[in-house]
Image (cartoon, rainbow, N blue to C red):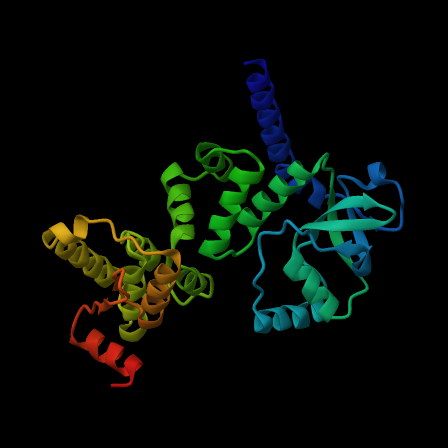
Length: 310
């Protein structure tokens, strides 16, 4: 019980520390810009410096990984003309080395623009966990992250900072249901997650698709969205119809657990992925068997036939 109380106290203290750090932005904006050559970490912590770009390293815990090349070039051209308007945020590592907390896009664009130094807020961070939470919170609040990046950030806050969904929601000033909806996105197949991350599929579409339990059905609806440009409401109706149809056609055979040796289960999964629909492989002990490929309408059948070359 004592250990639990200590852990709770530590989490509360950490949360307060992060909020205090995030609340100092206005004060830091008023701080004079200094040179970044000083080797005294305590003197520079909490201040704003101009730091050589080659003394700054990327934060390996950074939640953002996708940077649009065209947007990066445009930002680089703007920086070349006007310099950095919003300073980046770093922590000091020692020996005149710094690590990014937020602002990697601005840092990359500054290097492209040929800047030798860049204005930066220097934050005081006591440990790796606090650095991670600060990086995640700052990016979630300041950067235009896509839905998958937000979901991954929430998950990392929970997994690596030992926060609950309620604590994440409290820190982000969000409803718990909002955090839960983002986290559910991570259960979608990789193809659909990538489409959301690349902006090809909205979060509304993805939230409707995730109501389907079977991956082959999720992929079918995703393909319908791609090919027909379905709206969120249309996808919600399609999913509703599919769920209703499935509940009406539950048979005795469907209640039997479909078991296959691992090697044949992989074959079944590969075929389902290839045809983007449900495939049932049945193999008897004597080596005989059958393959059942489902389709949802005439157009779906034609698509499968094209895949088969018939």
